[in-house]
Image (tube, rainbow, N blue to C red):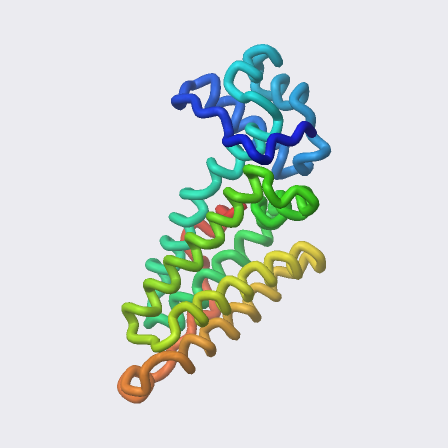
Length: 226
């Protein structure tokens, strides 16, 4: 794959053809990996010529970056939805993210976090545009949790948000290795306990810790951050 790590992805306004190319690339890159998929395969799946593909994307690197960029906001929105729709207080809502993710990971087409898998494939190219997009995505998730924890009166929201990210990404890796989504549920229990411990004493004294329900289906369980 040609590398243009110091050059920003070619900017084009959204168009049906460009969107179709990105959608085709996303399916192939996620299911097979970015190095295993060439631009010929992407063009064929999108139903366009290579000339058309290269009109919209200067290189395969730009296409990989567009693939991850397209997952950024949908994934963050799904995490927020899982958080908001889980009943209970803050610890339960945090655990709800992990429990919904565990349910989604049981889908046969689930293959882990696309951001992490791409970073592993490009580990020797830290300046690659896709690496920067992946890093920014993880920082957005961490930042959202940091703000949420700060609003709850937690003294060290930065540290707690970082712990949540470590639990989440660690569970992505372990579940992909063992093919056992219960590791995500275990990580969720640990996350909830950390949140309970970090909350002001007044919160725990008045309300007590509530963890996420252990039964029932989460919303949009078949969807998953990729």
